[in-house]
Amino acid sequence: MPEDNRFAGLGEAVDDEGSSAEPEAESETEPSADDSSSESTSETVEYDSADDADTDTEVDDSADDTDTADEGANSSDSNDPSAFPFDATKKKTVYVRPETLEELEDARALVDAQLRTQHDVRNLTGREFYDAVFRYAAADTDGLIEEILEARDE
Figure 1 (cartoon, rainbow, N blue to C red):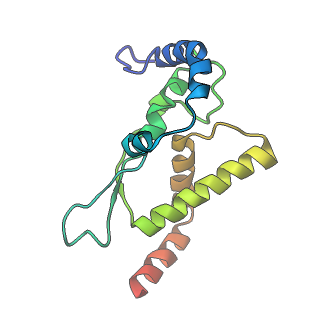
Figure 2: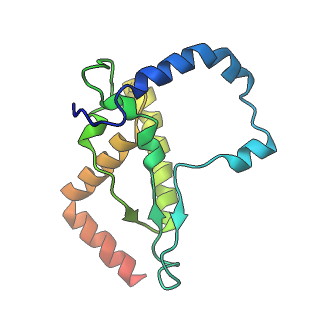
C-alpha cells in the first residue's frame, strides 16, 4: 500500500466513531425538512454548455467511493468483501443523459437486491457496480454498436 494514501486509517477512525455514536444516530433517523434540503447526493449533474445541455451530463459518483475508502486497505482490513481494493481504481468522469442515468440507478438497485436475496452478497460498493457495468459493456461491443445506432436513429 502506498505511503501517501490519504485514506489510510480512515476505516478504523470511522469504525471508532460509529461504535460510540450508534445510539445517538438511531435516534436521529428521521430527517427534518431542513436536513433533507442540505443533504448532498452521490450524483451531481452539471451541464457543460447550452449546446450540450439536452444531451450530456456530468456524473460524479465520488461519494460512492469515498464512503467505502477503507475497503482498499488489504493489510489492515482482511474482512473486505469487495471484489478489488479502492486503491486499484481510477476516478473517471462520464457523460450520460439523465434518463440513462436513472435507468442505471434502477438497475443498480435491482442488482443489489438480487445479490442480497439470491446470492447472500451484501455491501455492494459503487466501484464494484460501475466496474462491472464497464466490463460488461467492453465485453459486448456488438451490443454497444447496436445501442449507438439505435440512439442515432431516434
